[in-house]
Image (spheres, one colour):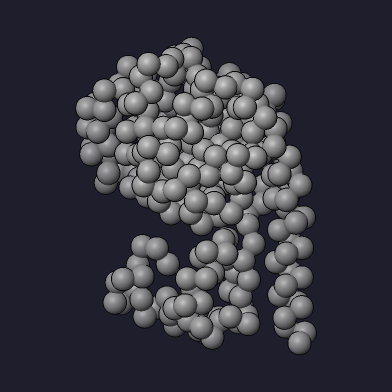
Length: 252
């Protein structure tokens, strides 16, 4: 829906698939809205509900390998980093925060075809002495870095309903995310995090500075994030939304 919508061959395949599916589910209401514009006939046989996640025992995870390199407030992000992740806006935002003590932690690696570009961007960012990159690691290793973070950032341009967000919420991290797809639907601005506009380094910098300078606010947002993910994004909730809506519509 994001990547191929303007490709003539892919556009036709996407439209055909939507129109000929018995039922279509989406991980965000925004994505469903766009699909219904593309294929209006799916409106009565489609639904949107967020991904879910089971609780994680972070206390059982080992101390990650690069923990001793983390200094000050740890601003972290997790994933396979590429153009859609908004990395450039995060770098620009952090550049304005150099008067504060922080580490920018990337848990994961940059996708192969973009790796050289991003490595150059990081070298020239003026932040190289504050950046830690884990490289490609296992999910268990990635989860072990979440307790090391103070702030979790997800400044994506588009991103569906990323599990990395839900994992950070389980770890009771203060979240700064963009108002795109399910990220913007899950985050309650100034309740369990900051929901900012995409493409805005300025808004991202303001949110990060506020959290860095107010540790109590970080804790407040983190606890609220954990409460929401445990109550509204549990597997039982996803199953209930998915099957009840499908069966209810099919029985009519």
